[in-house]
Image 1 (tube, rainbow, N blue to C red):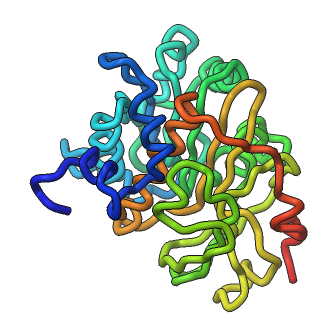
Image 2 (image 1 turned 180 degrees about the horizontal axis):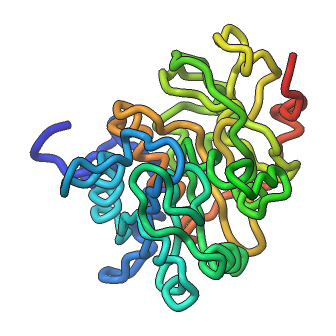
Length: 302
């Protein structure tokens, strides 16, 4: 990246654009100047602490540096926190969207960083806020949050899993895999990853997922042929999706374990596009298509 060019410059530069010209124009033109959307980027690790959200002393983590800077340049005020008290009913109304790269049962302090937990009232307030029309983005380990963790152990019955649309099973070794593009109209996809029917290859830590409902709108598909690891010996399944949760807009992508993925302009563009959709700045059709594009997605073994 040229030191003289901001992310906004890059976004608007033709060949280097992270988002499609139409979607980017809508995203940047929609909010009146001086009225950024407020986004809570929650990076609490009650389970395994991923390096991209690990702070070194007073230095913010890589993920929060990336998202806060990109957000600031594109009309989003991103506040990164590990403090579960941010979800209390008297605070939750200030946020337009929530972004999670989290692990474990967030109602506990956790065994490592021991940051303040989300209270039962705060957790309920989160779901109520999303059903009421707030946006939600989850990246990578966001599906390894709540669900099967700790005393909850609710799996598909967990309200968080029902909201995000899937649950972590396990993962194998990091590897380069093939990903199919099935919805290039979703903001951030066409310019970064290709048109419908195209595929791209990327190295990351890939999650095997379960408990995915029939109402997912699949954006990117995990191609399992040739993947190493027993957990991937199954039919192709959704890797990135969008869905409605009440009036709220929910987005998830399995990408986001590695530092070089977070530093990738295409990944950053996808997150900006998803924020645009989740906060209502960009409209796109997210009708369920999971049975059409991944007909055997819920079969966990080939």
